[in-house]
Image: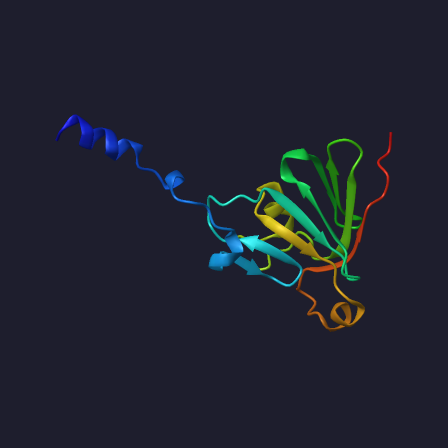
Length: 142
């Protein structure tokens, strides 16, 4: 093998190909309350919070500093600065299917978005389903 062929072999990587957004290829599972990146090595750059009124806001996962979970109170995500997101609902730490949980997905940066459910959706959701009842943005405690 010539030196040029060896060099080309080691220089060729997947990074040379343009990246496509994950959801264009169907690599995101829409699980109703959240979007899960399927690829084992996939990581989301940002986490989007979709409210039932149509508003949404996204935070950079790199700014996620602390995640608190209390089954009675829900999830509290602390981002850089004073940005806080409080998520309340049902089954926030229950597996939606094998190896797929909202809390674990956030910790592993595999959740692309979290969707607040409408009142009719909350009422008709099965007991074992993960349901986001509210996404709030309280002021951080000093």
